[in-house]
Image 1 (cartoon, chains in turn red, yellow):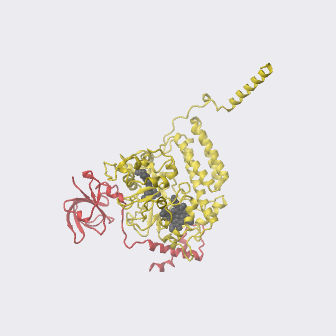
Image 2: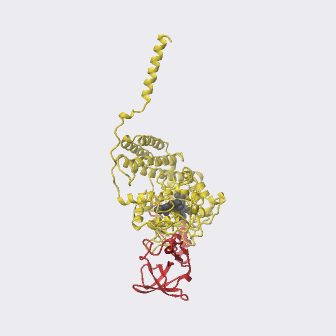
Image 3: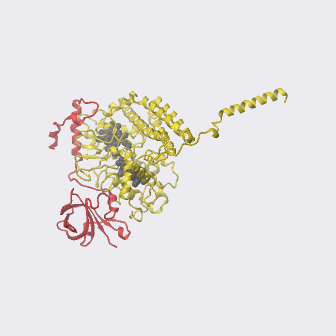
Length: 154
Length: 468
């Protein structure tokens, strides 16, 4: 655990900045060190962006603050199952979307007045309208999906 | 009856009449006229947001946000309060709407423990969670953890809900409200937008966010406070001590944030403190299904979001699953195996054999500290309410007639918080005096303004007993 070596350099006065008892006896530096370990315990191997379950019920385009801000909406041009990517034809050109394993895929059936369902990448077909929330901070021609909604047409 | 008797009878009757005249309250004819119409003041956005929060059903099953976050019950709900509600209260939709009879709520756990069903990790699984008060949101949502697990972006990481991931989308209060409508307002488990409910508009979300941000504390306390109770002052010292209570590691200034310079990041962070490992959880005791709640993310990492403690003492039971009923019990939790064997407990153990090891007197004094800061929070709330009534103003759109009634809850909470810990009999008697004044103001609208002003001076005196 390489981070351990940094612990000795940790400044207890910073950790406890603002606490009423600024003098830190030996036992405290111990606890600060182990407190640092907590950081290690909590770091997961992958920095996943999970999302709350209720997202699946929000129709395509209706996620306030997300739709068309950190998502793209368009028609699937082609699906490349082998490379786990698909392309969307967008006004700005072709966007390639990488789909990591376990990316949530939802079937938006609100147009048919039915309950939205959990889908899978196998449901992705050319010509379907999709909304893809991407992980990147800004939009570019190559994006990574965080979740995908597929519209089930009337 | 002879003349003497007659005379005696007459004078006795006269006396009785006289006496009863003394006891009669001021006759209504001499009552001054009711106060003039109150002044509409305040931020229109907050007023709009408050109205939506407590009245808007979003074409759903009849619930509003206020169904669970009660304005007259510290923006939360518990089993004791639930027991006072009529059968047809929309909280109980699962009991009278056949479409919601299964898998929408667990009426037994709702009525016995005040727990609400949340489909945290998808439609096919659920957890039972308590309703957090939504006070002090302004200072208990923003986080900047070093590890970016389940953050919205590199710069934004709002933490809402018990596991910090209660909201879809942008994860902020706006997104949370959308999620809450889908979760709690639906007419059926199909949850079809436009059929089972409507989604809040962006303008509505902005207004509701403004209202929620305006509720409760707008900034964190600055500990240590100059507390007059020696027990509470000792409790504060233990709370802040990095070797004894260690509470300030996570609840800095008794709020929801870590202290500045924390090695894990800043703001309202998540920890696995082992609440899920407590024996005899509500579900277990009631013989109901208990899916282990895995906290933040899907699958979860076992961590839960740190709540603010200033508002805790009068909003029990405690923790995400209402597993502990009393504030003393909640402090004692940190002494037990579930916490001390948890990742967080192990991490702050240091060289000691046990991370947190408090004796009975110490636990009670930490709880006394939490009781006292809660009473101070009640005083702040009361000051806002009574001040508005004394100025004959609406409070965020609420008529003074309602505000004065509602202030009784905070008075009772303050009495409960202090008397329940045998603390500050001086302040308790001031709160009782305040209560009498407020009751009179409720009964006689014409005297409301004056009585509210008087009540305000009495709670100021109560405060002076608690802090210097």
